[in-house]
Length: 361
Image (tube, helix red, strand yellow):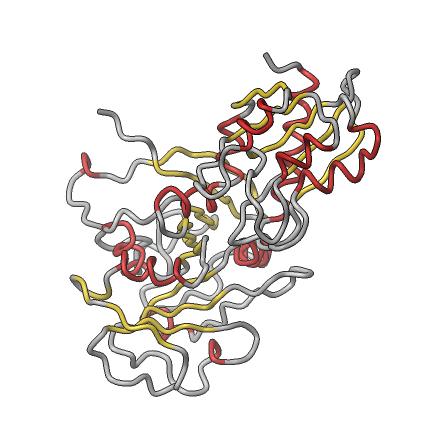
């Protein structure tokens, strides 16, 4: 049974882990805290970048000799394989750690087995402490491993009556400068930002991260079935970040000359599952969907939305485009039910974060 000190250490380890969001992909985010017999922290660390030392290594280095006989509290089961770094399970054994408590088991078949290795070496192991919180912190990586596709966050901005633009098409700016800055934080945490041809034509978006120190730029993706929306000189074609244009297999050559991927068609556009598979093959583990109502509807219809982040401005328009179009929903019983995980003020706006609710059987 985990102690109060271990629970407190796990909460801190989770806070450390999320510092790695946007830097560790295609690897998970992980935090580790080493505590002594009295519950005092003697070392801590987190996985800072792909290819760099894992969280356990940082924490053990910080703890030094104090790691012997101590407890390591880790957000993910210590890895059991040698890649660009050595196995963390063995590093914990070598450091003399007496007990390991972790939140989430490692589902990666190439890395799992750390708990078995630890127990075989005589280390006391406990799994599942703050498991739900650990799952949430690593949602993108866990989705990619378990489902073989990137984790998708659909972000939108709207008025309180659900309008993303006015009747004349104007949309700048519905939400505040604070909300727009917060969106750049979301971009910085994701591997790819995706929009559709309608947004590309209407807004000529840039999609790169601005104002986030040290941010790694995401892949900019335009879903352009016919290959005609991204014209030479478009803002997504500058050198601020890489760009990929997704077009239909039978589309004409893209006039911009940008990097393209050709995908099968589906009703009304491209096959969303094929798009996500293509992105996953390129190392994309998390997607921020910023497209308009039509593209959002296609992702919803494909069952490919994992999280929704809505920025609601205290304003009313009365007419204009709605947040979502289609999605395969025709009646209330088919509504996409969500579990709200957060509601916070961002400047004058309200940011609501929700995940898909588990369907009752």
